[in-house]
Length: 324
Image (tube, rainbow, N blue to C red; front, top):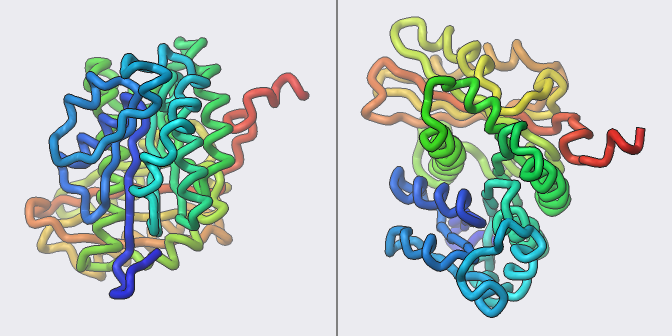
């Protein structure tokens, strides 16, 4: 919980290979005050992380540091076996991001364990995961089950579809597309953390974030940018044209808008963008927003929106079709 001086503790936990890659990306771009922890059953992969990134090799007696072999149950057992090693990093946390690539072994199995640990000690828990390409059928089935399990342990779960990501950048190499997924999550965590913890053009109030995310269920993220004199008019349609999950955001119960602009970006501009987003969502949608200034963003505007409370029973209940 917040310390006596009111400082909030924000933690990003990366689970498995993809989660650890996100932690590495966040370390490269600046964590914005968030603490970082990388968890993996693969010792060799952990050794590739920057030395200043905290990491824990989970379940070494079970996996001998060689990975989970694509088995989510092994990933889960590894996390359970290493709870004592993980717990100190989560102690007194106010906000915990849990990120993983679903469909493998370590991330799929360990992320729900970590999320539940964070939730049990009172933190607001936001999951951020990617799910495999549709053609990866075996991995998709694992991902669906793991995502449903993780959703139960999180206040809000942001899901990124690799298929949608690839549609956004169809000519990008697969490896770079995966790196882009890491960057999307890292940007979201960095943006939210900085706008809460650092002086900003419009700070994001943690109480507002909590009211939006608590019980937020399934969420999707959309992002984009705009430049030039019409950037404030262009940014919302640009962002909404790049959803990274194939769901209907018009039924969302909440929306978090985060804006980053240059030295010429002011509160009037931010308010204009906020109004344009509000026009595109339902009357009952709770819109919360924050904005920052980046000296490198001259006449440029970057934004992401996280829509919460999105109905999608088939994604969070992989057995739904069989029940019908």
